[in-house]
Length: 388
Ligand SMILES: Cc1cc2nc3c(=O)[nH]c(=O)nc-3n(C[C@H](O)[C@H](O)[C@H](O)COP(=O)(O)OP(=O)(O)OC[C@H]3O[C@@H](n4cnc5c(N)ncnc54)[C@H](O)[C@@H]3O)c2cc1C
Image (cartoon, rainbow, N blue to C red):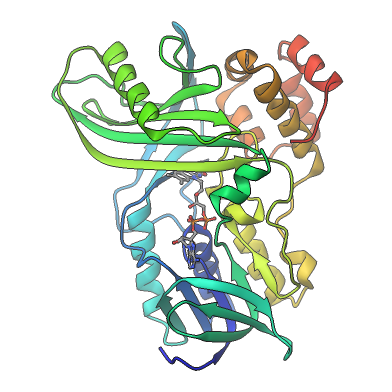
């Protein structure tokens, strides 16, 4: 890679889920001949996370060369009460990030017009010649007509804003005896014995003897990882009893839960992607499917020469309203949160709730779904409505 400035059509800074998804969609489009530089500080080989999403069929970007893993039921539980829902025609799909990275890296390597550079981006700015300049730590500067950026804000910047975050730690464990119900992914287990008020466990059983167990906390402050490990150990002990297990994979994360545009583009020529662009659903943290919708929209808009506004991630404003009602409850009356989620799944069908959470419902569907819920806490949240 040259040390002096080189010029590209596009520069993609941050080549994680969103950067790779954009490349995938671009290379499937009429823009596949663009000269593109992608820069990431990592070599994108490590298996650093798992992604789940729900849909009727695997998304087109779902890795093809690895076994398809999915669940047909989901569970939500609180105390001794477990609400188990069939997903009907939908499935809850799972992706191992290293499979995803591997397939997209292979795809870009087959295009001579795409260059991957492993380096740290220091700044990304408009330049006087009407383009964008990315300055890297070790390889100098690069120019392009447009940049697509998904480099996350520093944790301190998110913390300062007192935004609620979904902070989690997960262990994939292998046990010496059968102890998981492998047909059901448990999205939320509000375990009163172990967890704090706005915390729950997430269980993905891969077999009767293997599962990802994740402890998740909604918090405005940082949470100490050692205390989260203690929670997972205690959950295993209390719920699975005496057994031997080995930890085969570990993941952790912090996803912002906010309806504020905290990654608003600072320039017409820099398009933000992924979590930075606000693709994380504020009330649930699910991001993967939204990233795919956003990247596909970007590519369609670029093909049609639409202006910069068309490239921004947008949601219908009524979903911001629903999310704020939930976030308000999470912040002000956290004890009610488990009941809100359990009630939502208890009185509605699995596909109806998941379509709602994917923001794929009509206003009429939403009325039909919300009218069944226990009202008092929602009225309280509405009276004290605030944007979060
Ligand atoms: C452990 C974990 C599990 C998750 N599970 C789910 C899930 O099941 N379902 C779901 O919908 N969402 C999930 N999410 C949320 C979301 O889908 C992911 O965080 C997703 O990876 C976001 O994509 P992104 O491209 O915005 O960020 P990332 O994938 O994190 O990509 C950002 C990239 O920027 C690079 N980078 C950072 N700084 C620099 C720099 N200065 N210079 C160059 N490169 C830099 C990083 O190396 C990284 O590759 C999860 C998140 C985490 C952390």
